[in-house]
Image 1: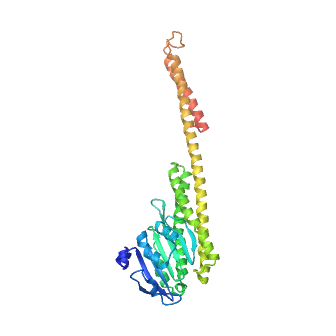
Image 2: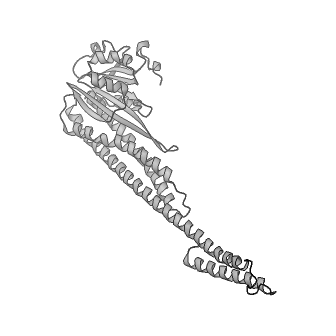
Image 3: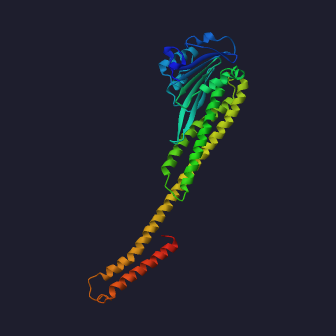
Length: 336
């Protein structure tokens, strides 16, 4: 969906959706953010604003309408924040990292969602393509019993969607790690060190995103925030458990890739030793005939058999026999 396709006014193209919800039911879509609070029709109603990669000028109206803290506003505009939960007066500021796995490139694509949560409003700012929330809004609008709990219901739904989105990433990483592990211990070894390194880099980045989300979820599940409905707080425990499982799995993948890389280096050393043994064996097989040929090729008169008809064939046969004995010995020892 393009910014302008959202049906908002020209000076607010950055706003994807803007609506008032009362008793869990969506009201008419608003045209502008200015004066949005005038459309609230009593306790339990709230405004849900969705924005995509706003600039400072584009976010200014939202900043003023909901009196958002300047530090949080700066984070929302610049993005590139770690997952966190901060409290500014009566407003919660939550940063989430979204993720999706690009299987062909073996890359984890990260996005970012930043949320401002007040008593009668929730502002959701998205950065990156891995952070679509269209389905979250539609699902909540079909659950007025949940949505009437206010902005904290939106916060839970978004965080649940983010953590659920981690599961395909975990599965994709697991599949590729299994492949690279088999490649390392395959009979047709091909030194996948570069693939292991880049996979580990993606795992480290994803681990930072997933693990940092655990602490905010724990606070939401156990803490007392005025902006979070008491009944919604129980739902955060389930999301917290899922995030813990993801963080644990990713930590295991990181350790496993370290072990695989070490095993690959050991395999490399083994193959290098095998190559050196083969080279040494062939050198040993060749050096004795070369030595004999060198001796009999010296310019002396008194060399045994030098003047006889059988001299040359005897030397050739002797070289062949010695080379054959050495070759057989090295084959038997496994060097060739």
